[in-house]
Length: 524
Image 1 (tube, rainbow, N blue to C red):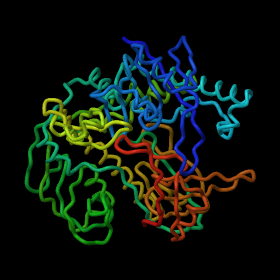
Image 2: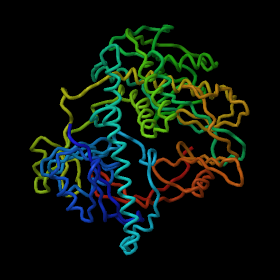
Image 3: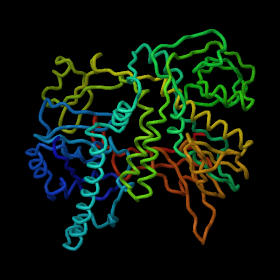
Image 4: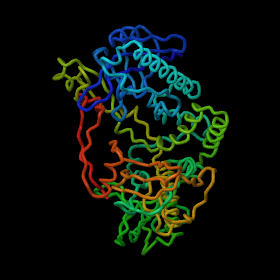
């Protein structure tokens, strides 16, 4: 196996409308540490090393400063807009965020004042020494984390593929392989988590937030569809895995409309595609109103993931007891990454190649489609061949996610109208007795905190003010896609529109770095 190394860059501090540039690079391979003040020198150095070199969030940042050192007609790997893998000479560069999707601070990271990074200030000897020491420690921490991952799981490209490899070692049956047709038939039952505003605006009431301990791992302890074979029956079958049902909408069932995933509660009859878990949760809570099951779908083979979850749950518990932060993080990611791989749709995957600008007109002739510009290159893209497309079993993923939505619905009902907001595996409720089982066990609920004021502007757009303790307050906030401050979050919750321009540019594999000003307004 090739040696593992890491690189990291220190750049100008983020500032609106300024594209940061690297002024210092670090390289570490477990025994050697090198620093470079010139990007070209770094590229020349790593080009001669037959190593796998990681950069954390490299595909969204660091790698974009190295694009000019790629070779023409090189293949690169992009996943969800992230440069996941590319080559410079003999070195293979990989984004470690793809295998460890968490900030480095979740493991270990030193602190520093980023004001020291400004040109003119960073050049002072004492400041440069502080920055150099900070960079070196980041490289060492990243190398420790990446090598721990490789030792545990091998050289996988993504966390999800790593989890699937681990499951293959445990699975009593072969990992399922289905088809595009199967995916099309069963994906109608596959939805994401339930995110919903039950109230909006500014709420001056006391409430508490509760989270499920490892909701998806808990769901995976149950038996879920695993085979490709299934039977479809008209009407209701009590042992079915999925149902197509017409019922009055009272908030229990997921529904796709023009706005995406919703949970309508207007009493209007609709046709719903639901899992058995959601159907039974609605039945048990009195939410099956004027319901008629049109069709039942029953799979021939089922599987639970108890052994897989049990293994990593125990390993994580042991890691926590030993204060092994790296192990705790890696085992948590392993538990939460497997189910999504079953539902992956390879039709969205592409192969990519970089072409010189002079070849722009000839890319299509070569069998590639133009995919935009990647730094100095023209990006060519092509769909994966049919042989390389791997469908697992979207029904497995659909059943697992449906179980968690059912858990959440039962908690919403137990709160007797107290829930003001929910997000996938958590509720915020004004109920003094939320009616849920609290504890540390897998699938039990954890009390996250008490709050006395909420500002809810929409899904993933809120601010919760913690109850004052010892003269201090903590805040729980969300503003997906932007980083609004507390004052702006309160404004949005009150119905105002605010502008947000990020200090850091967006690095895209298909266009130059950009600063995009967004208008944020309530979406409730």
